[in-house]
Amino acid sequence: MLLTLFASLSLSFASHPLFEMTLEEKVGQLLMVQFTGELANEEARVLIQDTHVGGIIYYNWSNGLHSPKQVQSLSLSLQELTNGNPHPIPLFIAIDQEGGAISRLQQGFSHFPGNAVVGNTGNPQLAKEIAFTVGNELRAVGINMNLAPVVDVNSNPQNLVIGARSFSDQPQIVAAFGEQALQGYREAHVLATLKHFPGHGDTTVDSHADLPIVHKSLSELKKVELLPFSQLASSAEAIMTAHILIPAFDTENCSTLSEKTLRYLREIIGFQGLIVSDSLIMEGVLKQCGTVEEAAIQTLQAGCDLLILGGKLLIGEKRGFELRLSDIQRIHRALIEAVQSGRITEARVDQAVEKILNLKERYK
Image 1 (cartoon, rainbow, N blue to C red):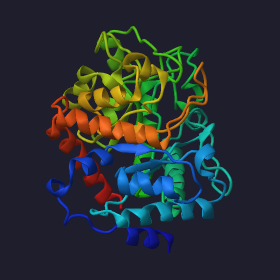
Image 2: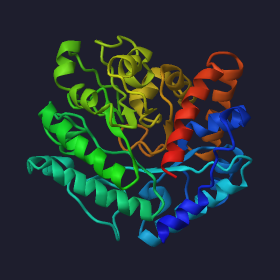
Image 3: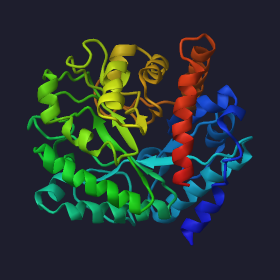
């Protein structure tokens, strides 16, 4: 019943080809943003109908998420706002529901351990069953995209940001469990997102607070960090980047901003799906760009298709910082101006939007 209800909101937009959309609408589709409210409100209306954003990401501190009924009502009210747009394209509604400590949905939802506990069972089928269950619960409350599974290899025991979020310190085990998780989400009809390319497992710095550097050769990376992504790229539909500097790929730019790194993902690994940035308010990327506007421009230039403008800094001197409506409007305008000035080609925008629209059609 619930799935039918949400499907009815996602009107077919096949009759609205890409070339009919304005530049403002197309740039909006590239943005996944947060807003404050437990139901759609004026802030959400402005984001969806005036700024034309294509995605919303949920957080406990901004959206309540205190019961399935509340989350369902929130999703429904947000999707209804898209019907007021010239092209009523449904939203991506996303969440971090990895299991363990990184689980935004708590009350009234199933609780599963983090990936390390699942990996220690030695039974990859469990990863599929968990993902299928999580995916079904997400769909029932109107969430169509999960920023999971994590397929970083926990190759450094001093890692501050991955740890128990990883299935294993062995790349083949990570790949095996990641493959089953992808299958579970696919069967539940939820878009899964492998993260964090090219691998955040061998770092000792949290990219929320600073820029981690991984000093490994390409040969070493292929054997460990890159292996799960290489093995799963053909079955994955979305991959998230990491804000880490890997000189073997690029001596100047972190992976999110690195055309060289993302070209490797496209051309060498062969991934043809959606490349999603990690949140652009994290210090790992801002230390290289200075402003979120500049980070957004460089991220799109490098090859990311969907830009996440959500979350808050949980550590460091800017603890508590998060984007407001005016910030998102300014970023949207900066991207438009970058296209109008020729800094970003409209073909690059169209390429990204086409991937987004194709996936929205598949997961509506």
